[in-house]
Length: 442
Ligand SMILES: [Zn+2]
Ligand SMILES: [Zn+2]
Image (cartoon, rainbow, N blue to C red):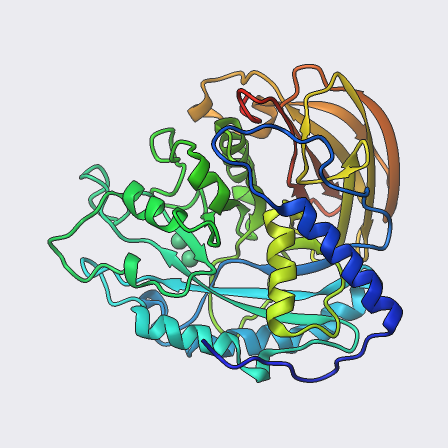
């Protein structure tokens, strides 16, 4: 694949390097191996609790289109999207302060589906990949990094007749970290594999990473828009499908998105909430307010490939949250274990939360946990129908630190949700309380 891009600004003190290495290796130990079919929870395999200052915020977007998507045909190639995003980051960085690690952007053009339109084939995908490696969109310092990622959005495959206007059989899925999209491109009109077959072909390679897109909002039938179309849990799908979009920078979609996040968790998936803006405009860059945030060690002075690995390791480990505010930092833990952790069930524990916002007052912050839903699972429209509140704070200021003992009997997963005074919201990845027989599934 493309050139190794080790350009620019590689400034790092020896001390920083040591801290990065230590934290990085601690992260590796935490993330491997992935649980296999029979899950046995390992209480704290994971090493040292996260302490202040070790993890930094990486703000970005995992869903973005260039002119390689047929519904954006007048637009330019993906390089322009990364360039716009990179050009905007210094201004954003000036607001965020010391908790900033950097920015990232996944460009995810639509994959060719011959029944409807001429989207990206594998030749274009290879161009997209090499543009993601272009030195002009690589920044490794001096005070933050910018990391470009290549991806693709699966949209094709007609769902059997019940939605004649659209070509969705399984809604939309974002695929990341694959070498090729050839196995997923439809070139033979006579060949119409089931959506599940395509999903499983992708999930068969554990190095891949994937996302459920815009579930249940928008006009089209989307991933998870009812109980039939959110694919059932399998361990292979679970180890690859690690993101679900809970918002697209449109407040009206928030409730539906977070409901579907809870539905995914109830099925047993280990998914983190992301905001995918789904912008089709390479000049827009990271222009919206909403961001997906990865919490990862400093990537200053690292090569492009090392930075990608660091961010992907954080994402796989569930150090992720979705926010409508682009300056928000949230870190939290249960009994010293950070968000994303899979722990043994317990009757009680201590929550610790830190939150900071550079341009707004934190109005309310809650620790939510699963409970028996008020309605059948596929009818959940609002997270309050299937969650309870374990802890609640009303900080009324831009920085908050809290610590509270909570009861955890019957809890399978818990996460933090937060509201800024402006109405902007954020939701974090969960901590899972698992058992050998059922994993985290309620
Ligand atoms: Zn889509
Ligand atoms: Zn899209």
